Length: 227
Image 1 (tube, rainbow, N blue to C red):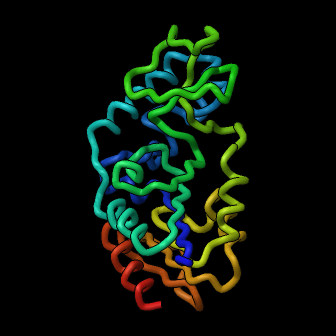
Image 2 (cartoon, rainbow, N blue to C red):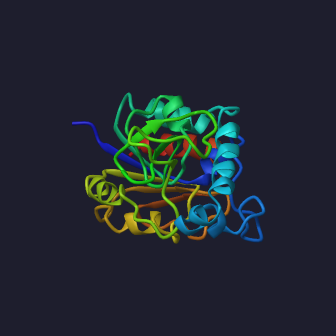
Image 3 (cartoon, rainbow, N blue to C red):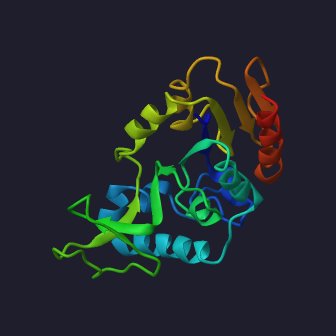
């Protein structure tokens, strides 16, 4: 049976494709307080602002492509079982060819009914007030906002228990939900942490690779082949 590699990815892997991270150094998201554009309260107060914020993100995503780190992970599927658990809302893993992806925070190219959470649609154009589901309710981005449950977290926890190898890319191992998932990885699982400015050091069963994703993923794959 093929070994199961679990990959946790965050903003760092998509940044090299030109995806801007939402949050600026001052904590604002594109000049907005996070609660204005990424919370149920913000959507209730100013839905047009929220819809425009995600319309801009969606337009940008249409202009970028996967990078070599995305493609390298997809290539690994030839020799391993692969599950990518991502905090990213882009579709770059899918476009690179990875086939088993869990999106913890939702997907930018999907929208859903504001009333029925199961009524989800593919959506690549602007979403405006008046765009409604089949039952006449306003559509909203299929994104997990602050204060909302993370519906895919239980699935992710279960998957983590089956890991033979773990790769963490572009997300801090001290920031949740990624940090919480790591507690469910079987003890002594070989782990590779790829980050240009890591907050931890290498130790037994943990190889820290202080590189950006496009370089670090290749190094991790070479190390995995020598396990």
